[in-house]
Every structure is written in C-alpha cells, then in structure tokens.
Length: 101
Image (cartoon, rainbow, N blue to C red; front, side, top):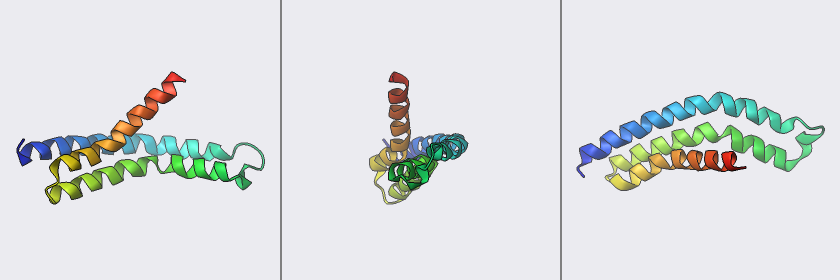
C-alpha cells in the first residue's frame, strides 16, 4: 500500500479512538468511584489498583493515537496502524469477556 492509504486508515482509527475516549470518560469516572463502596476500602491496595486502572481507560485511547501518528511520521507505517488499533482491539476483547461472564 502507498503511504496515502496508511494515512487514511490512521485518520479513521484516530476518529474511532477519539469517539471511544469521549464515550468511556464519563463511564470510567462513575465506575472508578465505585471501587470504594465497601467500608474501609480506602485502605485496601486492590481498590486503589482498580480505581487507577479503570480511570486510565480513556487515556489509553489517546496514547494509542499519539503513538500511531508518531510512528507514522517516522515511516513505520504498519506499526503505526497497530499502535492506533491496539486500544480498540483491547476494548473489544474486554467487552467480549465481560459479556461472556
């Protein structure tokens, strides 16, 4: 493929990652606060880990997009598409795992 085709695919992935980050931000804020629902959970390490992991979900979409464009600018075309698509693949896999339980 020519570099122009990679750019078009990367633009589509950027729009999809931006949409996913915008949609998951309010959900992550509401869900992360529920990590401390049980009494004395603010002293439990796992509650804090869950809090920060859930809160960072929208950030991974942004990091994937930035990494994809950075790699594209340095002519790592296939790797740039993989970096931009990885957060979407991970979220789809997580969604499938949640729905299967």
